[in-house]
Length: 61
Image 1 (spheres, rainbow, N blue to C red):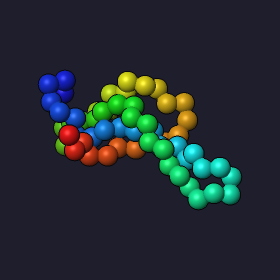
Image 2 (cartoon, helix red, strand yellow):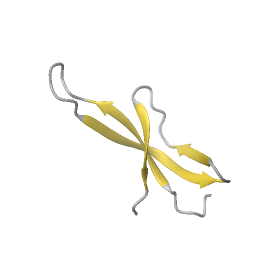
Image 3 (tube, one colour):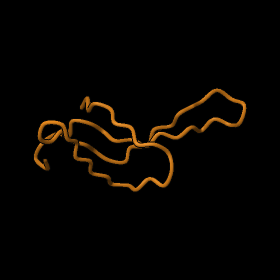
């Protein structure tokens, strides 16, 4: 995997809207992910999120 371009970028999604406002998600880049075997995904994080939700987006680079 290290020699291969990641299939996905991994982000942490957090809502940064104040109370009463429309949701406003902020995405912070925390890693990369690769497809493995038939149905698996291997995730490598360079930051450890303490809150929020992990979100994977296809790597467009």
